[in-house]
Length: 71
Image (cartoon, rainbow, N blue to C red):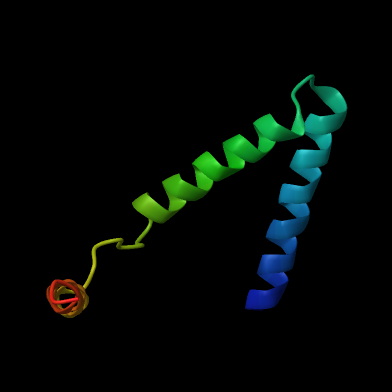
């Protein structure tokens, strides 16, 4: 299965789960969105996304702050 087909299959499966929970359970859309946000963060933190800044970026930010001290 090609990558775009896998993405489509995953999207359809997620849509079905969401629609099932809306139809069968007494939880609101806000709760579903909250769970999805929590899962999004879990995926980002535990599956290879690094939120640490580059040293170069830190240096650029520090230089800009030092330059602003003279204003």
